[in-house]
Amino acid sequence: MLLLFSSLSASGAQAAETVSLHTSFSPNRLGASTTIGFGFTIGSTTGGLPSPLTHVDLRMPKGMNYVSTTLGLSICQPEDLIKSGLKGCSPNSRLGYGSAFVEVPFGSQAGQEIPEIQALMGPPHEGNVVVLFYANGLTPVFAQIVFAGELLPGEGPFGGDLSTSIPEIKSVTNGPPVSIINVNSTIGPSHLTYYKRVHGKLVGYRPQGVSLPLRCPKGGFPFEAQFAFLDGSTVLAHSVVPCPRPAHKHRHK
Amino acid sequence: MGTSSNHARMRPQLSRAALAVGAAATAAALAPGLAGARTRAHAARVLNISENANLHLNNKHGIVLKESGTAKGTLSGPLYLQLEVTSTRSVKATVQVYPGGGSIKGSASASYRVNGATASFTGRLNITGGGGKYSKAKGSGLSFSGTIKRSNDAVTVHVSGKMSY
Image (cartoon, rainbow over the protein chains, first blue to last red):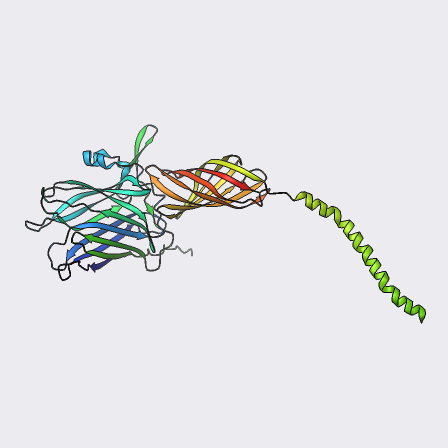
C-alpha cells in the first residue's frame, strides 16, 4: 500500500520534496518468516530535481520478531566491503538486496540506475544491529558506496527504527551530489542463500527471516518513514501492509 | 425458697468453675501442638546460588522461545526458560528450575544484543516463588545473563545471587 506526502520546505515557497513510500511482506502470513520489501520515490513539487537525500528513518511495525531471525549470522566489516566489494564479506552476512535510480544535476536528466544495492550485517553499534548498504554504481555515478543504518528500538506502534544516514553521492569528482529518485530494497531471505558445513561439505540453505506477529493490528501493519534532505526539509511518509486474509478453513462434509 | 435461691446462686459459680477447668484442659491439650508449631517455624534460609544451563529450543511461538535443559550449580535440576522478545534490544524471561524437593520460579528482564552468529542478554532476575521446600523462595536483583546461538536458538544461561526460602 502506498501513501504520498509532501514536505514543508525550509525555504518557504521554493520547491518541496514529495515522497511516496511503499512496503510489503512476502509472504504476508501471520507468524511466518517473511521478506520485508520497502521502497520510496522522491519527487519535487516543481517537477525539477529533488534535493539530495541525507537521512531516512524507516519505522517498522511492533510485534515482529527481529530477534530470532537467522539473517546476518556473519558480520561484514565496512573496510572489507570498501576494499573488496561483496567478495570481501561472507554470503552469510547478506540481509537483502535492491536497486536505486538517481539523477545527476546535469545532462539529459534521464536518470541513471544503480542496479545493485546489497544490505549486509555490519558490526553492532552500542548493542544495536547495523545494516550496511553497499551500492555499486556504474557510469556516470561510478562509485562503490557503503553506508550504514542502525536498527533502533521503536516507539508507539513501531517496533524498530532503521535509521540510515545517506552520504553525498558525487556525480563526478568535486561535482554536485546526485539526487536519489527511487530506491527499492528488501530485508529478508528471499533470493538469499546461506552456507553451512554438513559432514565437511558446504551446503546452501535459506535463512530464517524476520517473523510476522501472530495477530495483525487493526488497520494493518503500519510503516512510517522520515526523510531528510540536503536543503534542510523533511518529509514524513506512511504506508500500511494490509492484514493477510484469514487462512482458508477446510470443511469436512 | 432458701434452697432454691441457694441453687440459683450456685449455678453461675459452678459454670465459671467448669469453664475455668475446661479452658485449662483445652490449653493443656493444645500446648504441645503450639510448641510443635513453634519448633517447626524457622528463619528463612539464605542461599548464594550460581547456576549454569545449556538449553535447547522446544518450540517457538511468535516472539516467544521456549527452551529446556538442566541447571548445574548450587541448585541442580531440570530448567525451563521462556524468552519473550519485547523490542529489538530487550527480552523478558521466566525461569523455572526443579531442584530436588521442590521448584523455584523467577522472572527476568534483560537487554539483548546481536553480534553475528551469537546474541547475548544481560539483566536481572527476581525469584517470585516456588513449590515444595522452596515454597517461600524469594530473591531480587539476581544476575541473569546468557547467549543465544542464532542458527538453532540454543541458549546458555547463567543466574547468580542470593535467594531465601
